[in-house]
Image (cartoon, rainbow, N blue to C red; front, side, top):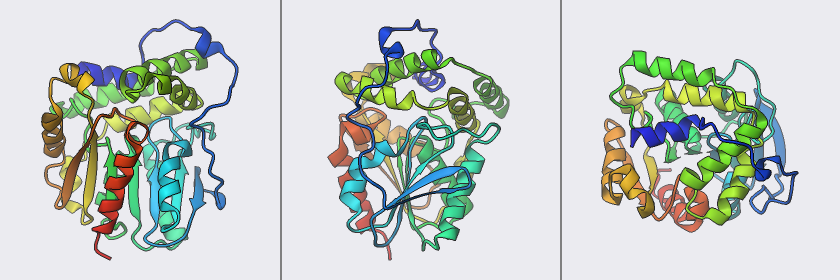
Length: 309
């Protein structure tokens, strides 16, 4: 399991260029289409605001992703909630800021909450965005009403037994990694078809979107993510937490666990969180909001409805 996960994280297979990586831009069915009521920046982070109502939702995409990840969620929840969709520096064509990574991005979320006077918003993050949401809820427990993390955990799965020296060494290796735009695009194709989604007809379109990100920025955020172990901070979280655990039976042999086993494993990594639920989303891979959009949004709706006001 750990070998597959580290390979997926590093996106570093030495692949040759293909015609797909060299092709010019074409229409993409998954590109963002919902016009925002407002677009602005907080720090170096791009924010798109939709809808109205409370509690507010802050949607944080994962590695190399943009607002296009949350289009169906925005459609379903904007009539009842103010929604703030973030795009981190270096992702989805938003300019990178050399030397800045996850810490600066988290500060922009805190600043967004303060500047817009959001009263205990709900943080909803995918992958890296989920890690950030968990970290923010631990750092600022009184600012957050609830946390949803889609396949983002306080420690990278498979590394939970690593000593800090090993974690720091891997982080440094990833931070130094560089890819040409063509190679990066090819790596995204490999990742999406093997880990990102169960629908191969969808993988190429999603990979073309993630390939718009800056390779060096992606490497920086990957390094920050694997360098973290937030488990000791979990008891500080006051808000209820929902972790959505994607599972695809086709990956069971590689993961060396079934659906129940993966759910139990994710629960073990969240141990110490005062109020946490781990819910499986199946069949789905890492981008569960595309493989199972209705199941993901139903889980969000039920979680939000159950939060104390």
